Image (cartoon, rainbow, N blue to C red; front, side):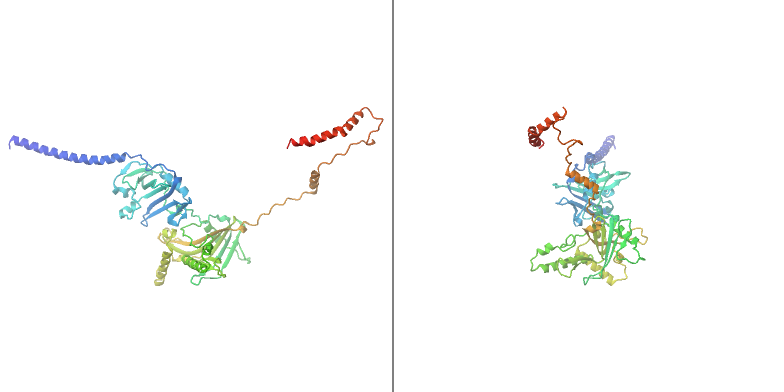
Amino acid sequence: MSNSNLAQSGWNTTFLFVGAALVALGVTLSGGLGGSSGEIEEIGRMGEPYFEVFDSTKAVSLQVTAFDATSARPLDFEVQRNSQKQWVIPSHHNYPADAQDRLGATAASVMGMKRGALQTRWPEDHAKYGVVNPRQESLSIADVEGVGTRVTILLEDASEAVVDVIIGKKVEDQPSDYFVRAPEEDEVYITTLSNVDLSAKFSDWINTDLLEVQGGDINQVTVYDYEVDESEGTLSETEVSQLTREDSTADWQLEGLEDEELEVDSDALTDIISTLDNFEIAGVRPKQEGLTADLALDMERILAEPAVTRNAFAQRMVSEINRDLLSRGFRLQPGQSGAPDDISLLALQGELRAGTNEGLAYRLYFGRAFAGSQDDLEIGLSSEEEAASGAEEENVVETDTSEEQAGEDVETLDTPLELEPNVDESGDSEVDPDNQPGRYVFVRVTFDESLLGDRPEEPVQPEKPALLQAADETEEQGPEAPPAEKSEGKPETPPEDGGSCQEEPAEEPAEEPAEEPAEEPAEEPAEEPAEEPA
């Protein structure tokens, strides 16, 4: 090969390497510039707020969606402000929520959220940082552990949410920093959040203290022990036990207890008072339509019907109410008169009345005990679903009595105030979160003046001593005119002759005021001075 050929071949080889290098450089530049522009754009958003500062008092809706990895289901909780400016929980039969303080705390915890350092731009990393959107129709198994908590706040007269973010895991070794992203964005930023207060639990948004009573204020307890035949609707003989005490330091006294050798079981009373003091709400159900707030029939609704069909309408309404009540362990019992307003509520597990020294009487009607999941406890099933569920349980018991049913012992408790938690034999931990015990309870609160004790009598003014009465009478009569002074041994009128020169001036003034001057001064003080003060 000639030198020229070698030279040409060398240059060709050189050009090939240079061309390959240029192609590689072009690929690198195109890929690098494409990625860097996005990174530069996202890095340029560092320090930007996720949303504008807002007034939390203008909020009308707050929604918190989390994910329960144990049950593998989302927890979606929302509070709304209704037209009466009252915060309610739509998912829990519009039960009133104590949302004002918690809403303010939630708003404060997310207020001023800013994008910090950019962590990733790839959706594949969302599970790693715990920012997978919980509001999805389906989730992959790989994403279950990485689902975040989504918070949405809506203001009045606004079509779009003022706050909508997904809060993920905490940044390691930075307790106040979290991985956060907006639902419509793929980018994940590190964001500082102080005092994060987010909860999708029903119990965190209500006042769980059902009775709001202090045990020391209870001074009367009445237990109504009876049984109801569900099929016949008949009531067994009622045993009434009434216990009273003067105050929280006094002993309980059982009415009718005459045997001096017997005494009240103070430990049992202490347990009852403690239970009432700590009576907590586990869930709520809507009151049956047709019942008033005091658990009586809605007579206005009945009287609105024509007289011809009124009785039939009332009977049909009672039948529908009873069908729903019986599934929960209650029943309406008509009185002997048969009148629609002569009706009372009976509880399959009896009743208890607790009175306080403030005049409040709490009447608790204990219904059926049951076991279920957290949702079953909080919001329950529909009446039809509960009835079907109860029928299925009865069939299981009848067909296979050897199998132990979870939670079957809740019906055989000694008192309806007790509910044993579903725990393992060691009692260390709950073994079945879908089989937690609960009991239906109706609560009625009235005012009973007799609980306040004897009415205070109006104080009577004490009778004054005779000496003070005489003094008062003297003051009322006014001071008596002083008698004219006269010297002993002297006549009332001076003698005509024999007077001294000092007696002459006394006669002249006595005559002048008695005649002419006496009239003018008497008229002037009686008229002119009396008008000036007026």
